[in-house]
Structures are given as structure tokens and as C-alpha cells.
Length: 152
Image (tube, rainbow, N blue to C red):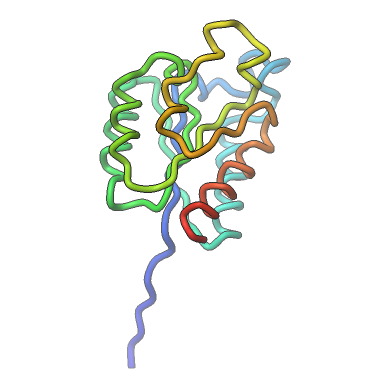
């Protein structure tokens, strides 16, 4: 008898503009770990919670909007570090509002201790929670929160 198992539910990790520069860009603010390092951390945390992880990074707002649209009805949760788009992308906010699962907003630094323009997020009103200021640890914490909220 052939048994097929259901694939693990998926958490989508979205990374916004300039995050491909992590490790080189303002290491005093964002640390020396690369985006690839953070994705490995997130992948391990997802696997430990019984989830798969997909990652999309783009410097283009529309690519991230498309990724959210493609996640609707397909992935269990979204973790999003939208970078500067967090502060002004109404298109991304609208796309996230249509998502039918938990959303966790993530920032490596604490935006509330930085420039005034960073202290307002258009993602926050459609997110279930926010992880910020914990550096690379935030990736594990955000994935664990998303998995828990998604019933994992």
C-alpha cells in the first residue's frame, strides 16, 4: 500500500528592498549576518515547528505584492521584513490585508529608537504582531510566532 503524506504547511518569508545588502550595509545597525544567514535561521526554526519555509527578496514593491497575492490560500503564515516599504507601501498593506493567515512584521533594528519616519508602519495595522530590535534573533522569534499563530 502506497501512502502519501501531506506536505508540511509553509511559512512565507518576505524580504524587502536593500536586504540583500545585509552584512555589508550599516553593520552597526543591522549586524554582520547576511540575508542568507537569516534565511537559514528562519528555515531551521520553521522546520523545528513542522513547517516549510519559502523566501522571496525583492527591491521592487510589485514583486512583493505579487508574492503575497500568490500566498493567499496556499501558505499558512507570512513573516515580512519589508524594509523601507514598511513605512509607505499602501499597495503592500492592501495585499497583506487580503491574506487569510497570520502575518508577523519583522525588523532587525528597533524602528522606535531611530529616525521619526521609521516609527510609523503601514504593515502594522494588518499584522498580527511585530518583532523588532532583536537583530538576527528576530528571524527565529518571528517564525516561531507565525508557526504558533498558524496552529503549529
